[in-house]
Length: 138
Image (cartoon, rainbow, N blue to C red; front, side, top):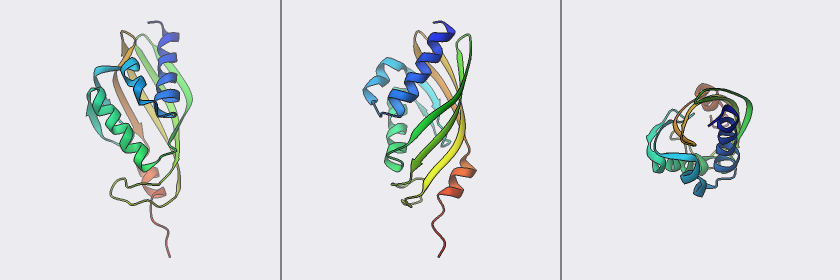
């Protein structure tokens, strides 16, 4: 695939699979044997593992949104600079729902082969996220 096609794949990955929660697109966009580390620090293997991770994020932040700030690509790699937003509505990191709006930054590094994502390594500002999840002080 060309660099343009690889960048388009990552845009679809975020816009359609993540932001619209279209899990049925995973088969088209994600390799069956994908290796993935998400912005929450959790590592998963296989397409099913990635979809399970996504559902975990969705349960905690039903309106979770990935905003692509920048995409850089070379050969079979694409790097995305991202802003994540959402509302804390479910348990995550052992913290029950607070209703807090969250916003944190991250970077995803992807490898693509045969038109599918085969590896993803996403680093998110977990310290910044955890600060936003603190219960309101009384």
